[in-house]
Amino acid sequence: MTLDNRTRWLALYVLCLGDIMIVLDGTIVNVALPTIRDDLGFSQTSLAWVVNAYLLTFGGFLLLGGRLGDLFGHRRLFLTGIVIFTGASLACGVSTSQEMLIASRAVQGIGGAIVSAVALSLLMTLFTEQGDRAKAMGIFGFVLSGGGVIGVLAGGFLTDLLDWHWIFLVNLPVGVAVYVLTLRLLPKGQATATGRVDFAGAVTVTGALMLAVYAIVNGNEVGWTSGRTLGMLGGAVALLALFLVLESRIREPLVPLGLFRNRNVSTANIVGALMAAGMFAYFFFSALYLQLVLEYTPMEVGLAYLPGTIVWGASSALLSERLVMRYGIKRPLLAGLTLMIVALALLARTPADGSWAVDILPATLALGLGAGIAFNPILLAAMSGVAPQQAGLASGVVNTAFMMGGAVGLAILASLADSRSDGLVASGDSMAPALNSGYHVAFLVGGIFLATAAVGAALLRESPPAHAHEEAMVPAFAEGDS
Image 1 (cartoon, rainbow, N blue to C red):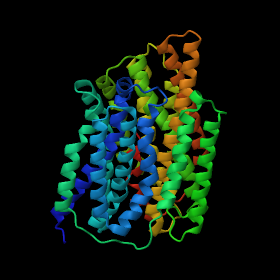
Image 2 (image 1 turned 180 degrees about the horizontal axis):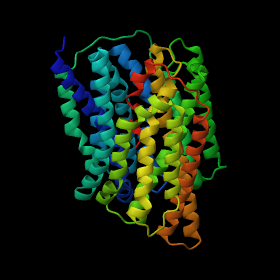
Image 3 (image 1 turned 180 degrees about the vertical axis):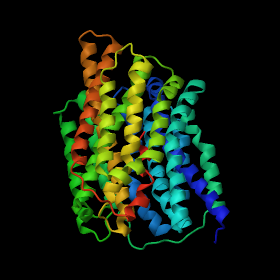
Image 4 (image 1 turned 90 degrees about the vertical axis):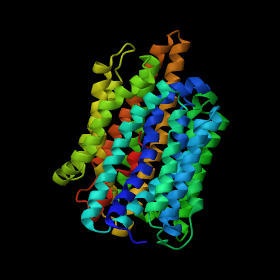
């Protein structure tokens, strides 16, 4: 069907609404984590699975979702993803056990990956004229940045005024509205590719990472040299090796390994994974510090994050691109990473009787500014030197690396923090100072991840190609970041 100009822009807003639901679900959960922990009896380390179950399936199926959209039509896959995500949100909202919530979060991740993978393709189909496309992508990116702000506030208010179940149930009316409006406003479209789907690649890489994360999360409890831990880590290595073999031999791999011969692509993926590992130290452990050590209510936590989240959205939409245009990729990326390292260093010294204005606000502002500046250069670096027809693939690969880095990094950090806190409690310390000391370890190691990312960023080559610019305007992997 042929769309008039008004319908095209209305369709863009529907795509924004669908994708903002995915973004919102990331930040909205962090504020409610301590409440979920108390209600369902999670330990500090097992609580990481509420986040990781989503990250792992999201990252594992992001590339597969894009491939399925090419094969079966982007609107059809967008609708499928909305149905999966909305249904899983209902299951999360009515969960009464740890197992049910974690399983539902994993299914949410699959739906979120499909929606995120095809939304940008639908936008590119709707807007073919260069000026309109640039404007549409600017709106898309700005709305997604704003989703973080909405999620932080909504998580606090819903958890405080109702209960944590509503942070998931709020997705139901949004999902239904997006589904109905998509049927009315978006053209059906046709498949843009033929061939087979690399399900084996998606399953093996996701399975490898899930085994690794599970082994790391439970290492303190069952022992790092136990047969169970070593067996799971060995299984993860075996599955990853199988994934690499499969990708090198099949005709249409999920991830063409030749892409990593490009120095900037391979380096940007490593930097993105390390950046995510450091960022999740901030999101996960600062929320726990505010509620379990400073005894903030969920609503107060949401308000505590608000200034930094606004700075993040503003710097992403208004500052990052200008810095890249003036200084290239490397200097803005290094500046953003440096600000993020400063943020974690500040959090690593927070006292057990800290205050928001002195101990939290400076760190949230530094991280918001740094992350907002750093995302655009990472995407540009990941696509520099890549052929135009592979720009979307390169962007998807670095988004996947970001999700996987966040999941594995969070598992490591949760394990280290828990080990430190348990040791102090066993030696006679009270709970709040012991927890705080464990969080300090997580912030310090997260800072080391970011410092290593900065070393990698210094190795990047400049001069991103012009064709990569449009793809990079939308910080796609910010969707699972919070």
